[in-house]
Length: 103
Image 1 (cartoon, one colour):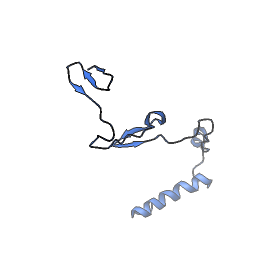
Image 2: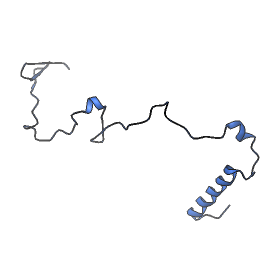
Image 3: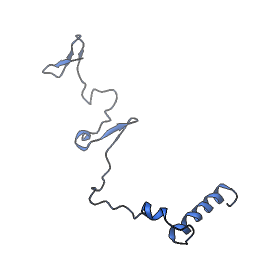
Image 4: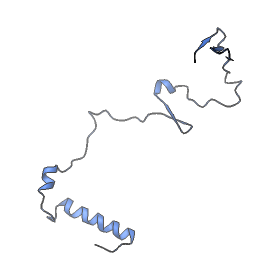
């Protein structure tokens, strides 16, 4: 559906209906859209306006070290390295928290 805009701001739609946008003082309900929504890239979700979070550039991001898959596949079970000690401990604590038998 198209419309043309007259000099006073009134929109006249193709089917003849006229609509004049109200000023903020004339509105019954207040306008919730932030004034800088377009320039800051705000989005509306569930009736609220959100601004994008400031994040680091990809070049500045540092990911934690992880064990390569090849090393993990050939890793001896129960060698008491940091990972071999940590994972069973986490499983024991989780089973204890859930009230299950230690296994």
